[in-house]
Length: 285
Length: 285
Image (cartoon, rainbow over all chains, first blue to last red; front, side, top):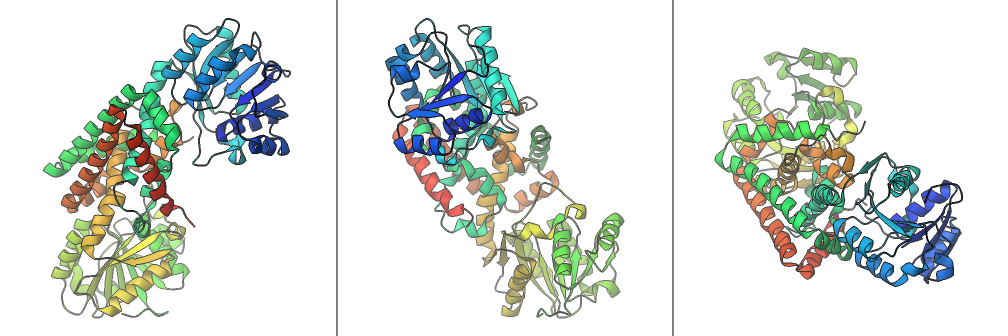
C-alpha cells in the first residue's frame, strides 16, 4: 500500500485513540470509516464529521473497500477479530494497530494472517485519563512519539507507509524499533511508571491527603486513574520484561533508601545530581 | 503580633520562595524588606519593586524595625542565624519559616529562642524546578496548600497571624498540623515522591529514552531535577519518618509485582480500581 489522496482508511475500535486517529486523518482529507461496538459512538463521530461512514457490524462489503485498517482494540479482541474476519479484507491492504505491547501481539497476528495482506505494528505514545470517541482530539499527537515495530515479515513499503502514517497524524518524532526493544522501552518508560503510580496511590486512605499535597504527588499519580481491564492485559502480555524493569527500579530505590538509613549524604547527593542531569534530556525544546 | 497595614515584614533568604513571598506581600500593600547573601538578588528585587529595602548584611538597626520575619533559608543556616542574631529582633516580633521539614527545625528554634519573640513554623507547599529571586512569582501560591505547624509553646495570636499570612499570600487552603503529623504527611506526599523520581531517573542511561517516552514518564520525573544540597538536608532531618514511608511504598509496590509474577490479574485489577478511586480525591475542582 502506498499513501495517496484516495487511500481509504478504516478505524476498528472508535475510542479515545481510534477517534483521535479518525479526526486527524479526516482533517488531512482522507476518507475515514469506522467499525465499533457502540452505535452512539458511530452517531457521534458522523455528527462531528470525524468519519464519513461507520458500522457496528463487521460486514465483508464494508471492510473490503479499505486500503489501510487501524486496529484500536484490546489486544485479545484484536487477535480474535483477525482470526474471524481477515477474509473480509481486500488483497493488498495494510493493517496496523495502536497496541501498547508488541511481542505478544505482532507475532500472533503475523502468524495468523493469510497471504495478500500485511500487518505492521505501531505504538502511538499518546493517551489521556479519559475514554471514548467523545473525548477524542487530533491534537493529542502533537509533540508525542510514534514507534513503528516491524519484523522480518514486513516489507520496506509497509514500514515506509506506517512511518508516513505517524507523520500524517502529526507526531513530533517517528522511530523504528524491534518489537522486543519496544517492549523493553515501554516496560520501563510506560508500564513501570503506571505500576509506581498505582502502588503510590494505594498506600494510604486518601480522602484527606489532598489538603496537604503539593504538585509533586499530583504529577506522580495522574496516571493512577487507570483502565484496569486494559492495563492488566497489557501488563500480562509483557510480564517478563515488566518484572525486570520493576526489579531494576526496586533495586535502585533501595540504594537510595539504604544511603538515607546510613546517613550517606554523599551517595544521596550523587544520585540527585545524576537524576538532575538525566532529566535534562527530557526538557521539551 | 497582629496584622495591619503598618506591619513591616522582613524576608531572610531571597530565593524562589522568599522572593515570591516578597512579591505577594508587596502586592498586597505591605512594607517588605529583605536580607540575603547575594547583592544581585537585592538589586534585582529593588529594581522590580518586589521589596522596599534590602541588605546583604545582618544589622541590628535594620532587623530591629520588622514586626514579622519570614526565614526562607536552608534549615542549618536558619538555626545558625537565630543563634547568632536573635538579639537584633525587636520584642513582640513574630518569626515564621518555609522549611519543608518541621520537627527538627521547630523544636530546635523554639528551644533556642529568647523570651519576647515567638517562632511558629509554616510550610508553603509550592515549589518549582527553578531557583532564585529572578524566578519568583506570587502566583505560585494560587491553588496550593499552606500548613501551619504550632506547638504547645505557641500563642493563639501567633497561630492566627500565621494562618492570616497564608491567606494573604493567596494559598487555596490553609491547614494546621502538629510538626510530627506534618512530617509524616510530607514524608509521604513530598519526600517519598522525590525519592521515587530520583530513583526512576537514575535507573538507565537516558540520552535516547526521550524518543520513546510518553507523558507519564515525563510527569513522574519532573521533580527529579532536584537541589541536592537542600533535599539531602531535608531528607536527613526527617530520616526515620521518610524511611517508614519508603518501606511502606516498597511493600505495596512488591504486592503489585508479585501479583504480576503469579498472573493474579484479579489482585492487579483490584489495586488499579482502588488507585483510580483514590486519585479522584485529587481532581482539582
